Length: 198
Image (cartoon, rainbow, N blue to C red; front, side, top):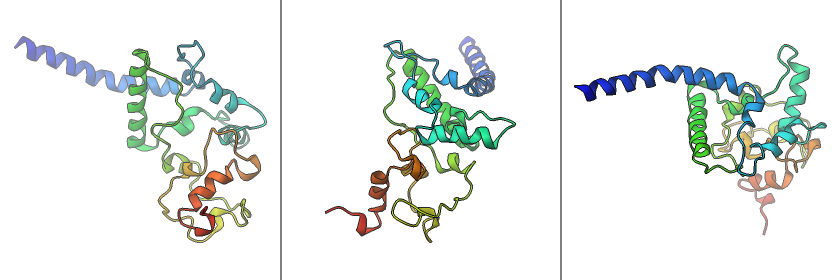
């Protein structure tokens, strides 16, 4: 009887804490400084290079370019935050981010956390499409006509937006919408023999 009562109390606490934890993390994630609050064993704040690139002007990456664009297009809320891309869309997308946050927090508390060298769970197309529901016509691409202007390239091709559009890489070309032609050509070669190397 006592064990059952203890289990009921624990389950009740977990059920009550869940919405409070969800809301609290939503509130904290609205501030980019929260994303850099954890410190690596060296003492350096987490994601420091990414944050420096994000804040740099002129824009050094696609993410930084988005931040500049938001100041112009959303005067009511000009801040472009980490969570605007990394927040997940819909209940499943948000839950996915919350689970990743729990995992990362556990690793951090266990002292087993390093600066990530890649995204374990990359952005989904829905994360991009909430602001980019369609494809803007570009007029030209790095090899002539722009990818999204070509018939058939706006259907399901089995590749994600982030396969070509890397948000935080600083070696991409600003004049080509922060794409890296070599990386994009590698993806193109999966369908187009003219891009395949011998």
